Image 1 (cartoon, rainbow, N blue to C red):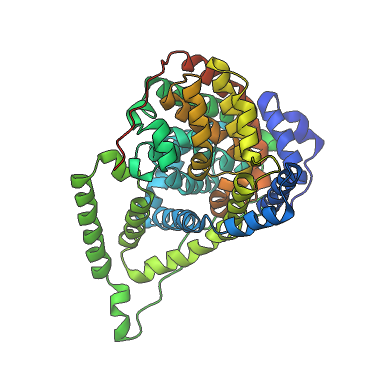
Image 2 (cartoon, rainbow, N blue to C red):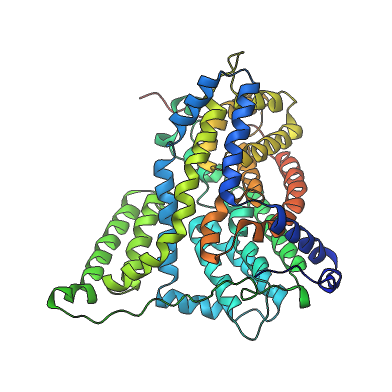
Length: 481
């Protein structure tokens, strides 16, 4: 049972650690469960649509029609958790995680270490970052020689998603803009194709990434609870047993293949052959940024690493409960997006269009960059889907950027860095990590909200200053086939 902290714990902290503790205590008491947060979000956007003059019929129609819009994405996100969990709990990866867990020597260093690795892995793939960093946090928490706050470790593990995910190779917006066949015709006519050389790999974007990582690690280190203020996993009544169930002995001839490595090995060779063919026929960045390809590789990699089908299925069974929150919550966010973008008001505009019209009418130049960042962050609280929201937001945002002569590649990166901000206060993308950590959103949000307070002004300042180093480049529109 969780008990209130003695007064001595409250006054023992100083600086950011004390602020983080205060915010953590507040969120533990007042922050609702992530599912309640999603239910409340649906109601809020419905009220906003009604206030905009939309009819009740239009609102409920958008709600119902949009409820399953993210079905494929929901399955993909559930598989991200499942495959990441299965791979990370295999014997070889578990040994690597345990070796990394032995590196930090102090509680504060452990927290900042997890944050650094979480963001580093997230640059390659945010899905892997969630599960890998979560299991690293659990491994550090199991150390008997180091007393570390489990909530702070969990919040640090989330920093890959909460700070820099959209500045990396798995950025949904950058991927979409780099692939002509993925862009809606109306957006393609405005922006043309923007490859990674104009978005992710500009020096301005890399500077932005480096600053955000340094800031996040520093805040994580300084805000980590120390001394008697630390709350361990045991004190939070969290089990840290990640050992797979012992495999039952084979009892009949028909089970022979279940206990043999031959089928996983053959499937692994087939997947390797497919991957080689992909690299030979497609651009490198296209291959590594494919979510479906990532899921295929990691699912089969998990099978190979567990050696036998029986071991693999045991790991899958243990991972499946971690997907429950995603399966019941993602449809609510799809419904929210539909109400925002489809429920037309009395003046013929949706709530989303009114918001865009307001922010983009405030001016160009550095002010435009700040406005777009603020707008993206606000909308992301209610529609936390980087790729789906970009398809909704991009047509009018990129047209406005063209009108005010803002560099289009940098506009994508403004969206990307601002897109991460609401993740620090909205538990949507925390769900997979929470399942791994066996914590609730309220356990982490106090620490992630503190990061938000530092990230917001730095992001707004950097998108303004770095934006002044760009010049407008006319988009190259591909010919209509």
